Length: 485
View 1 (cartoon, rainbow, N blue to C red):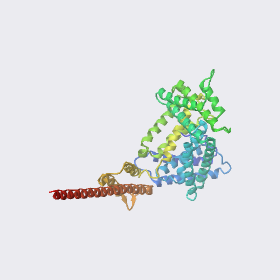
View 2 (cartoon, rainbow, N blue to C red):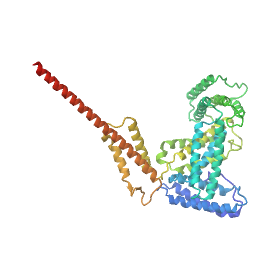
View 3 (cartoon, one colour):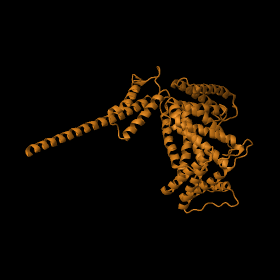
View 4 (cartoon, rainbow, N blue to C red):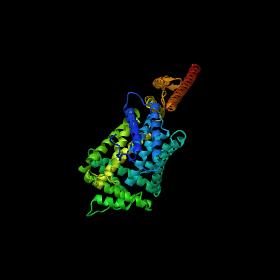
């Protein structure tokens, strides 16, 4: 828990008992998170959630005259709600209001970082917009079943995210479809260059290929490369960034925005070719920590469907929050409080944003199924993909080829007791999702079997017709010989 942001101790002695109780709740949640001997049960999560809500009620009564108070109580409360939120995802209750807390916190940071970076793609905003709508619906549904304190907090946070999202969308509206295509390509190249810049070995050849693409775009737009005689590329980049950013209030037109981004790309490729991934010693600790988190989260992408427990994301969130909140006026600073140069600032910001993007991706891809049922659910997902691929490739030649799929589906279906997938005497969350997926697989297998049987009948009929045609021709030939004789 040492990675939680630090605040001063409560000023009001009345808050100390509340702090003690929520610290105990946090400890219990941490133990529950670490216990891999069994799956997380809904009853345990709801118990701690209700205890936490009671403490929030007591805290609000104390703070009637000081609603904006912020101290360690709020920090620990945030820890607890983050954990509770991830636990709701773990037990498959994704559509309930408490599950939204962690997602909104992550999106808020992502939107702040997009604004700070000064460039982003329409796809970034489309995904966030779609899920904000879903989370808002979850909050609305939860008004009658969850604490008003929790609902009010979530509504306020989602309102902030929606306002930031609206501002970003308004900025992109200046680009017409033709300009948008070029702009989107430049965003992709700039991010790819930043990714190259953080590899263990600087890929000089790959970076040169991206530079060629940029020069091709420059030629198509009839632009000239920024001259910076007497100035470094970093100095000119900083000037360019200050002169025009996509999120500025200036009413710049689409072509101006795209030209500015192109200039930034060309300057950035020049900067990283000089630096070749070298980070100042003053910021090596921050860089190494972010790089390690980024690499770990990236590797989890390969196996998260089978092994990720959503609460695993908590420790990474807290480490990232600690780094993000240690910045001064948005700047990464060294141990003595001195800000980093532009190259380190942009590189560290890229890694920070990338880490939060991975966490966001894992949260939105969380299935509405308890981890107790995830092994079955993931097997069914694999079966569904296989059956769809078989159908796409032309089906099967014989129903016998479907036996392995049918046997597996029947074995899963036979696991049900009284129509439910049970774990001991418990009925884990996500029954409807697993049952619906099982039905889809059975339907796909049935369609493939019907198609195969239909083709077998048609083939048999064609063979019978061929035999009949061949037999008739033979009789006619024999009669012809008799006449000739």
